[in-house]
Length: 114
Length: 116
Image (tube, rainbow over all chains, first blue to last red; front, side, top):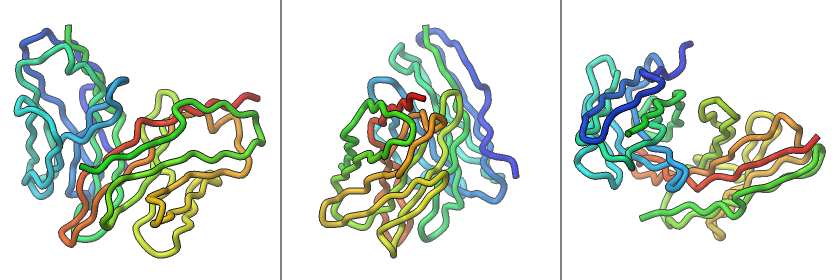
């Protein structure tokens, strides 16, 4: 079955702009999580959506937001971009119900802010 | 907040050598434990996971890990590495409550290089 699909793969934006990233989870998965990966901070959890509701949130400013649609696809938005937002943004999907589940990651979107 | 420590940031081994990568976490409650691998140019892939039960878990490609609750550790092992094991390895933990698991907290990663 198809894996987690993230679009676009690469983005270049200017400081102050906003950006929207998209994630299509594995079919049947209802949970989508977003992570930021940078050389300095490593992999950091942004937030998780389950059944169109934000269920968990990491320690990121309000400029980072997301949403999930009824088909479980998710978007992540970053407003007022800063140079430090340059990173690889990873999306992960999981079944997400009660109980232990594992996350499957997409290839990521490489965002460069100039 | 929970944290995950990986002791070795860079490891260089020769083919056929044995591997052990250390991972310690800080949370005292129920946890889910994972090792992920990122091969050059590829996405993160799950190597193995521990939810409950036998503390010695086996994963793909001959990897295994042992959960030692008293030491808050989940070390990754492989008896004989191959050149194709060259990759970045990440230990990850999520806290678990009755309502489900939190997001993953990752260690900083270990860059493993296997010399032929």
